[in-house]
Length: 331
Image 1 (tube, one colour):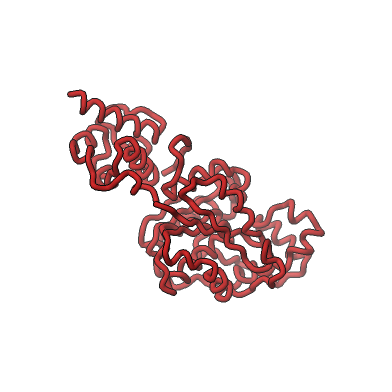
Image 2 (cartoon, helix red, strand yellow):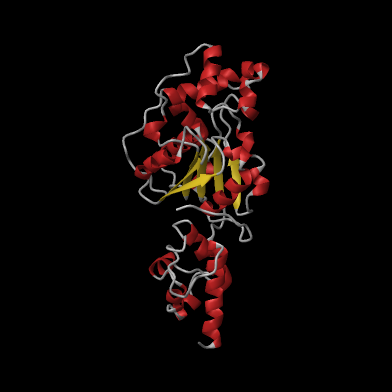
């Protein structure tokens, strides 16, 4: 093995090691059999591109998933017409939707936590946060029109849409709404703690209960933080807003199946009893592209309680994770 090939082997092995947090057992070990998956192979691609100074086609890695196989590509691996910067989005806007009753301000601090390549835009719904004085909307279509009005930039720049719990249903419907109106498809839809659309509607309605019954129902479905439910003064203020969101959710009917054009990332809490792992596979039918399912430590509110882990994985799914971050991913 000449020095040039040896240097290339070291580069490939280092990218493998940093991605899987383990040395390749041999030059013939298969990346996917060693613990790699569809998400981690993108991370391997990114690390190779950074080390080599140019993009490496993902198909080359898929077709040659061993150190030896990649070395066998020879000059194909060593040169490319695309610069390494093309591996990451040149600039991505991430539109974020909150869970039922919450303000999009919950995402404000993400602006300081996500890489500079990701522009975080919290989408505030009427009746909360900076739009507190506006009446909360109780019908889906007017709400989607309202949100679309704040997204004109998405016509011109790459974007992704994220939503948690009820916000995940909104995010899914918002992507459909945008593309129906001539917007380009997003780079990715990301949802967390959210059942697939045809399973999202509760079996019993909650929006039409008395205040006391409504609060107790919220406690049972574990869709609202307990500290909010226990504060009577806050609940008096927020019940109309939460009830408006549940009116939309309780009356929601999933659309006829028409898979989205974009890939979908689905995050779930490993201790979440209401949006558990076994329910997440149902998202497969909602994308004509790839669907990635990712477990996060915690329950329905892992977004808050396991934020470091979640944001690291979110960056990975967006193709914008910092190289020095370490995190594990399941198949």
